[in-house]
Amino acid sequence: MDEPVKLRIQRISKAYRGDGHEVVAVDGIDLEIRNREFATILGPSGCGKSTLLRIVAGLAKPTQGSVRLDGRTIAGPGRDRGMVFQSYTLFPWLTVQQNIQFGLQLAGLPKADQGTIAQEFVNKVGLRGFEHAYPNALSGGMKQRVAIARALANNPDVLLLDEPFGALDAQTRALMQELLTQIWEEFHKTILFVTHDVEEAIFLSDRVFVMTARPGRIKAEINVPLERPRSYEVKTTETFLHLKKQALDLIREEAIKATRYKDHE
Image (cartoon, rainbow, N blue to C red):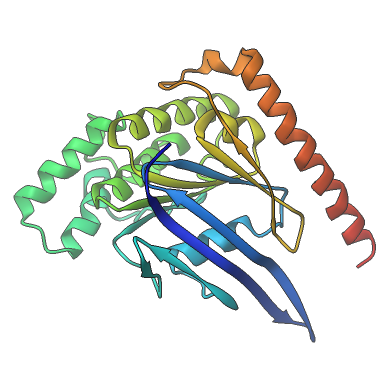
């Protein structure tokens, strides 16, 4: 991939203080994410993946280091980054279409344009016919479709996803992974994705960055040379299984370390 660097994460560290001692969540992380790249942060639970993503989103401030998007230092949240969380962060009093339009309304777009854009993304995520439904009438997978549509409707430079499929059942999760690859193929947004699911990371990504147990550092980078577009059949290929084993071995090492760390706390 010969695209320029879109997102530059430089020497990012984050420490928390509590109960009289300091906990280092992430330590000295350097990453360069290219324009139009699908990059995933993979690591064991508690390694600081979500902390790192929140720093990129501008929702948390690093103890040291900086994040630059197109050369501009990130100092807080902004419309240039769209965020999708694991929890269903929809407004329960708004319909599907109103949820998707929310950011467009804040941006001051004319109502007609808001409706046109919202309907486009309703269709893209397969929710035609549910425009006027409220979140309490939707399944988990449908709620995350709305959340992804809402983020994309704002046309961000970078899409940030924090374990967005973690609460879904296995079959729905697999379908959502395929939907996300299709969306990426169409819009080619730069995506930074966080997961602890090895198969998900390999299936979705151009590159996977494996993190160590706490304090989180970058342990390894795995290039994923699988052709696109991708479908679920790729998960049974020799190349996929080799990459999966490579990632599993790395994660297992860190999970064992994390268990030993807890035993000595």
